Image 1: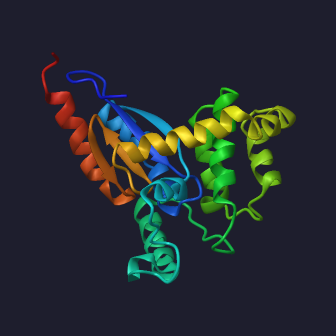
Image 2: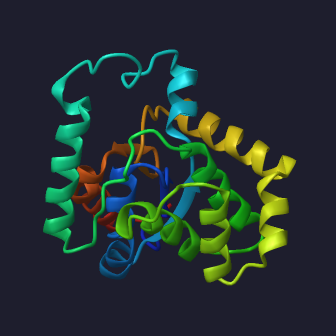
Length: 212
Protein backbone atom coordinates (compact mmCIF):
# COMPACT_ATOMS: atom_id res chain seq x y z
CA UNK A 1 0.00 0.00 0.00
CA UNK A 2 1.38 3.41 -0.87
CA UNK A 3 0.77 7.02 -0.04
CA UNK A 4 -1.19 9.14 -2.49
CA UNK A 5 0.73 12.23 -3.55
CA UNK A 6 -1.24 15.43 -3.52
CA UNK A 7 -4.10 13.94 -1.50
CA UNK A 8 -4.77 11.62 1.41
CA UNK A 9 -1.62 9.85 2.53
CA UNK A 10 -1.73 6.29 3.82
CA UNK A 11 0.67 5.32 6.58
CA UNK A 12 1.24 1.64 7.24
CA UNK A 13 1.82 0.96 10.91
CA UNK A 14 3.39 -2.39 11.74
CA UNK A 15 2.83 -2.70 15.45
CA UNK A 16 3.06 -5.42 18.08
CA UNK A 17 0.60 -4.99 20.97
CA UNK A 18 3.10 -6.68 23.30
CA UNK A 19 5.74 -4.07 22.50
CA UNK A 20 5.97 -1.15 24.92
CA UNK A 21 7.09 1.16 22.13
CA UNK A 22 4.28 0.03 19.84
CA UNK A 23 1.85 0.82 22.65
CA UNK A 24 3.35 4.28 23.09
CA UNK A 25 3.19 4.96 19.35
CA UNK A 26 -0.41 3.73 19.22
CA UNK A 27 -1.47 6.45 21.63
CA UNK A 28 -0.40 9.09 19.09
CA UNK A 29 -2.17 7.74 16.01
CA UNK A 30 -5.42 9.67 16.47
CA UNK A 31 -3.51 12.94 16.69
CA UNK A 32 -1.36 11.99 13.70
CA UNK A 33 -4.43 11.36 11.55
CA UNK A 34 -6.26 14.47 12.74
CA UNK A 35 -3.34 16.85 12.39
CA UNK A 36 -1.93 15.59 9.08
CA UNK A 37 -5.03 14.25 7.33
CA UNK A 38 -3.35 10.89 6.78
CA UNK A 39 -5.01 7.49 7.11
CA UNK A 40 -3.19 4.91 9.22
CA UNK A 41 -3.45 1.26 8.20
CA UNK A 42 -2.68 -0.92 11.23
CA UNK A 43 -0.69 -4.11 10.57
CA UNK A 44 -0.43 -6.35 13.66
CA UNK A 45 2.88 -8.20 13.57
CA UNK A 46 5.01 -10.33 15.89
CA UNK A 47 8.45 -8.77 16.29
CA UNK A 48 10.26 -12.10 16.84
CA UNK A 49 8.81 -13.33 13.51
CA UNK A 50 10.52 -10.45 11.71
CA UNK A 51 13.76 -11.06 13.56
CA UNK A 52 13.60 -14.78 12.78
CA UNK A 53 13.39 -13.96 9.08
CA UNK A 54 16.48 -11.79 9.50
CA UNK A 55 18.30 -14.68 11.18
CA UNK A 56 19.41 -12.73 14.24
CA UNK A 57 17.71 -11.36 17.32
CA UNK A 58 19.30 -8.79 19.66
CA UNK A 59 16.94 -9.88 22.45
CA UNK A 60 18.33 -13.40 22.57
CA UNK A 61 21.04 -13.95 25.14
CA UNK A 62 22.72 -11.18 27.14
CA UNK A 63 21.81 -7.62 26.15
CA UNK A 64 24.06 -6.49 23.30
CA UNK A 65 23.99 -2.91 24.54
CA UNK A 66 22.36 -0.84 27.25
CA UNK A 67 19.38 0.01 25.08
CA UNK A 68 18.26 -3.62 25.23
CA UNK A 69 18.44 -3.92 28.99
CA UNK A 70 15.02 -4.24 30.62
CA UNK A 71 15.65 -1.62 33.29
CA UNK A 72 16.64 1.00 30.73
CA UNK A 73 13.68 0.24 28.48
CA UNK A 74 11.29 0.54 31.42
CA UNK A 75 12.70 3.95 32.40
CA UNK A 76 12.64 5.12 28.80
CA UNK A 77 9.05 3.98 28.23
CA UNK A 78 7.88 5.70 31.39
CA UNK A 79 9.58 8.91 30.27
CA UNK A 80 7.82 8.75 26.90
CA UNK A 81 4.48 8.04 28.56
CA UNK A 82 4.94 11.08 30.79
CA UNK A 83 5.86 13.17 27.76
CA UNK A 84 2.74 12.00 25.91
CA UNK A 85 0.56 12.25 29.02
CA UNK A 86 -0.66 8.67 28.75
CA UNK A 87 -0.97 5.81 31.21
CA UNK A 88 1.87 3.32 31.44
CA UNK A 89 2.29 0.17 33.50
CA UNK A 90 5.25 -2.17 33.19
CA UNK A 91 4.07 -5.81 33.00
CA UNK A 92 4.69 -7.86 36.13
CA UNK A 93 7.01 -10.18 34.23
CA UNK A 94 9.16 -9.57 31.18
CA UNK A 95 8.30 -12.83 29.47
CA UNK A 96 4.67 -13.35 28.48
CA UNK A 97 2.79 -14.53 25.40
CA UNK A 98 3.52 -11.70 22.96
CA UNK A 99 2.36 -13.79 20.01
CA UNK A 100 -1.06 -14.29 21.59
CA UNK A 101 -1.61 -10.53 21.62
CA UNK A 102 -0.81 -10.27 17.91
CA UNK A 103 -3.12 -13.17 17.12
CA UNK A 104 -5.87 -11.56 19.20
CA UNK A 105 -5.64 -8.43 17.08
CA UNK A 106 -5.68 -10.48 13.89
CA UNK A 107 -8.69 -12.46 15.15
CA UNK A 108 -10.46 -9.19 15.78
CA UNK A 109 -9.66 -8.06 12.25
CA UNK A 110 -11.14 -11.29 10.87
CA UNK A 111 -14.35 -10.49 12.75
CA UNK A 112 -14.45 -6.94 11.46
CA UNK A 113 -13.18 -5.14 14.56
CA UNK A 114 -11.37 -1.93 13.83
CA UNK A 115 -8.27 -0.44 15.33
CA UNK A 116 -10.16 0.14 18.59
CA UNK A 117 -9.49 -3.52 19.45
CA UNK A 118 -5.80 -3.19 18.59
CA UNK A 119 -5.53 -0.20 20.87
CA UNK A 120 -7.49 -1.95 23.62
CA UNK A 121 -5.26 -5.03 23.58
CA UNK A 122 -2.10 -2.94 23.89
CA UNK A 123 -3.67 -0.71 26.53
CA UNK A 124 -4.74 -3.71 28.62
CA UNK A 125 -1.09 -4.70 29.03
CA UNK A 126 0.76 -1.39 29.12
CA UNK A 127 -1.91 1.13 30.00
CA UNK A 128 -3.95 -0.77 32.59
CA UNK A 129 -1.41 -3.39 33.71
CA UNK A 130 -3.90 -6.24 33.45
CA UNK A 131 -2.49 -9.65 34.33
CA UNK A 132 -1.98 -12.44 33.50
CA UNK A 133 -1.60 -12.05 29.75
CA UNK A 134 -3.52 -15.10 28.58
CA UNK A 135 -6.50 -16.22 26.52
CA UNK A 136 -8.92 -15.09 29.21
CA UNK A 137 -7.53 -11.58 29.09
CA UNK A 138 -7.69 -11.21 25.32
CA UNK A 139 -11.18 -12.76 25.23
CA UNK A 140 -12.32 -10.28 27.87
CA UNK A 141 -10.87 -7.36 25.91
CA UNK A 142 -12.55 -8.62 22.75
CA UNK A 143 -15.89 -8.77 24.54
CA UNK A 144 -15.36 -5.25 25.88
CA UNK A 145 -14.89 -4.18 22.26
CA UNK A 146 -18.19 -5.75 21.23
CA UNK A 147 -17.08 -9.13 19.90
CA UNK A 148 -18.81 -12.37 20.80
CA UNK A 149 -16.54 -14.51 22.96
CA UNK A 150 -16.90 -17.87 21.24
CA UNK A 151 -16.58 -16.36 17.76
CA UNK A 152 -13.44 -14.57 18.86
CA UNK A 153 -11.87 -17.70 20.38
CA UNK A 154 -12.67 -19.65 17.21
CA UNK A 155 -11.07 -16.95 15.06
CA UNK A 156 -8.04 -16.97 17.35
CA UNK A 157 -7.38 -20.60 16.36
CA UNK A 158 -8.20 -20.16 12.67
CA UNK A 159 -5.92 -20.74 9.70
CA UNK A 160 -6.78 -17.23 8.53
CA UNK A 161 -5.18 -15.71 11.60
CA UNK A 162 -2.14 -17.98 11.37
CA UNK A 163 -1.67 -17.07 7.71
CA UNK A 164 -2.12 -13.35 8.39
CA UNK A 165 0.53 -13.47 11.09
CA UNK A 166 3.02 -15.05 8.69
CA UNK A 167 2.09 -12.70 5.84
CA UNK A 168 2.44 -9.52 7.89
CA UNK A 169 5.88 -10.51 9.16
CA UNK A 170 7.01 -11.49 5.68
CA UNK A 171 5.74 -8.25 4.17
CA UNK A 172 7.41 -6.15 6.84
CA UNK A 173 10.71 -8.03 6.49
CA UNK A 174 10.78 -7.91 2.69
CA UNK A 175 10.30 -4.16 2.80
CA UNK A 176 13.23 -3.71 5.16
CA UNK A 177 11.65 -3.75 8.62
CA UNK A 178 13.76 -5.16 11.43
CA UNK A 179 11.62 -4.42 14.47
CA UNK A 180 8.51 -2.73 15.83
CA UNK A 181 6.94 -0.31 15.64
CA UNK A 182 7.68 0.40 11.99
CA UNK A 183 5.95 2.98 9.82
CA UNK A 184 5.90 3.19 6.04
CA UNK A 185 4.97 6.37 4.21
CA UNK A 186 5.09 5.14 0.66
CA UNK A 187 8.50 3.50 0.31
CA UNK A 188 10.03 5.43 3.22
CA UNK A 189 10.50 3.38 6.38
CA UNK A 190 10.71 4.71 9.92
CA UNK A 191 11.43 2.50 12.93
CA UNK A 192 10.53 3.41 16.47
CA UNK A 193 8.09 5.43 18.49
CA UNK A 194 10.65 8.24 18.54
CA UNK A 195 10.53 8.51 14.73
CA UNK A 196 6.97 9.88 14.75
CA UNK A 197 8.19 13.46 14.04
CA UNK A 198 9.91 12.11 10.92
CA UNK A 199 6.73 10.26 9.95
CA UNK A 200 4.84 13.55 10.19
CA UNK A 201 7.43 15.27 8.00
CA UNK A 202 7.22 12.48 5.41
CA UNK A 203 3.42 12.79 5.33
CA UNK A 204 3.65 16.53 4.75
CA UNK A 205 6.25 16.00 2.03
CA UNK A 206 4.04 13.42 0.31
CA UNK A 207 1.07 15.77 0.43
CA UNK A 208 3.12 18.60 -1.01
CA UNK A 209 4.19 16.64 -4.08
CA UNK A 210 2.00 17.11 -7.16
CA UNK A 211 -0.07 14.09 -8.21
CA UNK A 212 0.92 12.25 -11.33
